[in-house]
Image (cartoon, rainbow, N blue to C red; front, side, top):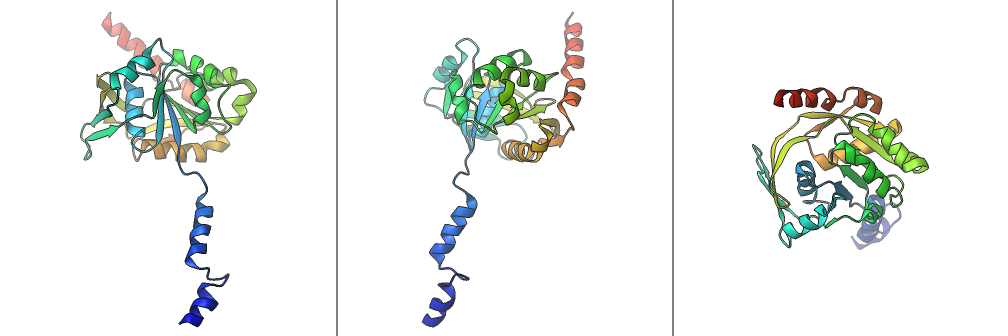
Length: 246
């Protein structure tokens, strides 16, 4: 009845639909988007960029020579094409928001993912440092030995306001098939170990990064980045691979 509508639906206890909508919007917050910087231009970086750009604002950053300009030219106005072998959805098409060598884009980032060799990590940390906002999650794939120490040394006092996540390895076996345009995920690991500095930020970091990666690989908790450093598989496997080539 009209009386019921006035006394109950329009009351503070039972707000009108418009009031419910406003309260719902307030509960959701103002921002539900995520900006991700993907660092590098090789196999892993192109795969990460292709995956994340399907849903989030993804900016590809490379400081290596003129790689960013070459990638931008190679892609042009087209989208990237990612093939996922053995998956029900085997073809993913997406386009990064930007491909650049400008470190100031770090001011936009909620998450920064480094998918570059460890010798390049210091350059990215140093160039991003002046621009990074408080609470930025920095995921390093893989962190190798001492990744967290290098991060702290390059950011100085600012490091305590950031969240560093060291991954033991890359999540995928992958290769680009046409550089800057097409790449293939040959296989996805079931799980990858990761450690967070500071440890208190582990729940936040894991929830965000697992959301970006998807169901697999599963981000498996490692107590600290010292453990990631000491278990560094690259230090064991890569010398053996090189020895085999001799």
